[in-house]
Length: 384
Image 1 (cartoon, rainbow, N blue to C red):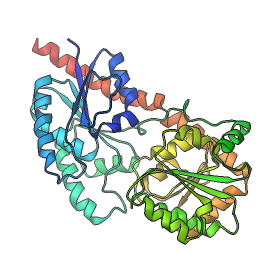
Image 2 (cartoon, rainbow, N blue to C red; image 1 turned 90 degrees about the horizontal axis):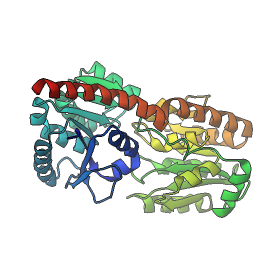
Image 3 (cartoon, rainbow, N blue to C red; image 1 turned 45 degrees about the horizontal axis):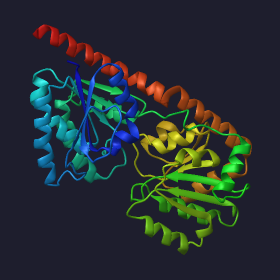
Image 4 (tube, one colour; image 1 turned 180 degrees about the horizontal axis):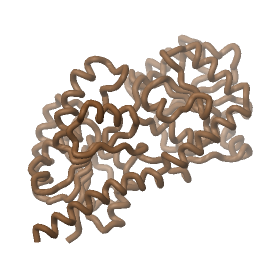
């Protein structure tokens, strides 16, 4: 009978977006793969999928139902490894797996950016920090995806058996890659863009943290000196209509394109000139990594995730203190210097290939998994 691994998260789309390569890797090792999360998405490389009523809010009463069901699933299946993701999914899973751990199951949790970090609201520290610190005692391996979170977990002495740092979830550098100038012009025409437009791109949910309003105000500063600038905003969310209204108020409707939810980001990014990021907090932003893989330089606000990826003067610029004038100046600098765009973009592509590609991240993760695979195999033989 093959060994079993269980992956959990709050929603199943998390796995479709970020973890298919590792699900495939486990299948290639001969393991039986199970997934438990909210949703009915059909996932490849999965032998058994459980739809649980996990809710993003830790205070939602339905999470107690999800916890009870998750505990039954874990106790019935004798998993060798359980890997949980997302804050609520991670807490529920580690609590539900306490009995299994005593029997040898190894529990891994990936923190995709702690909600408590430098500059985070006090409420985040009061709510999330005590929970993560406490629940780390039920964790065999805590995986962090940026240096700041790794150092925080070490300095604050989180009780996980091991704390590791990997370079995010990995970027498909064959899917996200630069294209020729000729192909770029063809795509622009298809999307209704002019050849001499200076195109900025940002993909994110429209919410308070992603802070698209900051970019809209930056475009307002540029409308006289850089009228050919076009800001493409992909995504949906609670603040979408508010942002559309702000664009009208600032008289920049012709400079901003709201694209909605898109499944063709890999086709759009390479035809753009610059990636921008305005979020207040990030763990390690996939949108920025994908843009870098496509050879785009980056101008982004200061936070731990952006600082992990953007090296000032090498592949982009970090804008500190939500400085609206500074981000406008940085954007204008790239718009008027094609050579700088090309050099910075090439540097970003190299960084992604060397550290953040799916191949590199899969290698980092597989080394962690192999360690626990050997431990569970040794335990199984000892019991026999």
